[in-house]
Amino acid sequence: MKNNAYLIFTKATIGTMFILIKEMVKISPLKVELNPADFIRYAKSKANLRISESFREKIQRHAKVISVKEAISFRSQDLKESAYDSEIIGDLDIKPVKFNDALGAILSLVVKQPWGEKGDLHDDGHANLFYVEINGFTFVTRLFRDFVNKYWYLDDWEPDRIGAWYAGPRVFSRH
Image 1 (spheres, rainbow, N blue to C red):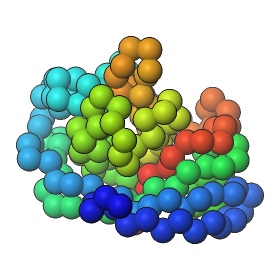
Image 2 (spheres, helix red, strand yellow; image 1 turned 180 degrees about the vertical axis):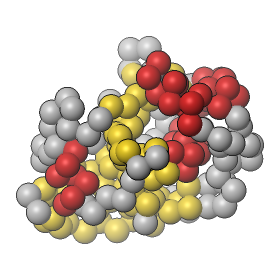
Image 3 (tube, rainbow, N blue to C red; image 1 turned 90 degrees about the vertical axis):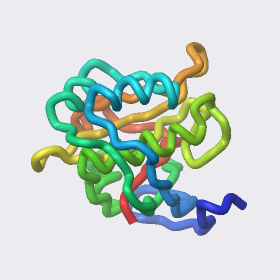
Image 4 (cartoon, one colour; image 1 turned 180 degrees about the horizontal axis):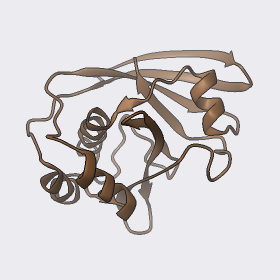
């Protein structure tokens, strides 16, 4: 058992989705504070993280100084059935994470497993989902490990825009 996670392993039915509540994840503080341009460079060099153009624009337009000053907890849940974003948000009682908090948490998690090491993130091609809020607007952030090119990839879109998620993604939300 890792010293930074508390495993729960309970099965639950919430609404129409069968999920496995997997763990409470403690996000470690980052030892750096990054402005948006530095965040993008740091993500690529230290975390092996590539960022889509649309998400990069959001970072440059809306992010402030990015850091995790103290350890924070996230709930991590794996979807066992297909579900739309609106079902995930409603059935799992997801509260969108503030943009800067999400950026800090994502970077802190990826830095711990930049080359696909085992850890809190799915590293098997399944998505890691964060529901993020900027100025009252919620969007989906997907983080996944690209096996072919051997890096992490981060992108975003409006909820329910691309259809339902198949079983498998891990959903992170503030605890």
